[in-house]
Image (cartoon, rainbow, N blue to C red):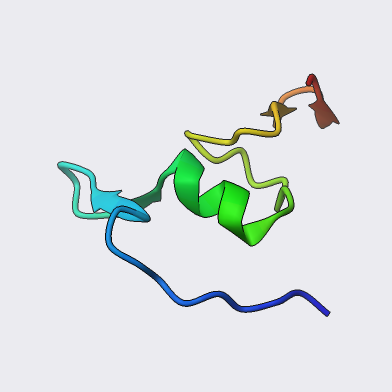
Length: 54
């Protein structure tokens, strides 16, 4: 089961379109890659090739 971590200040910002964009800090605290192609993925996931490059 995936753990739920509380949102802290600096975990995300709002894009000009109004979406939440999670930061690298948040992804590292979460501790795993969700394989959604996140903009700030510290794990190096590539959605086009469905692989982790790091």
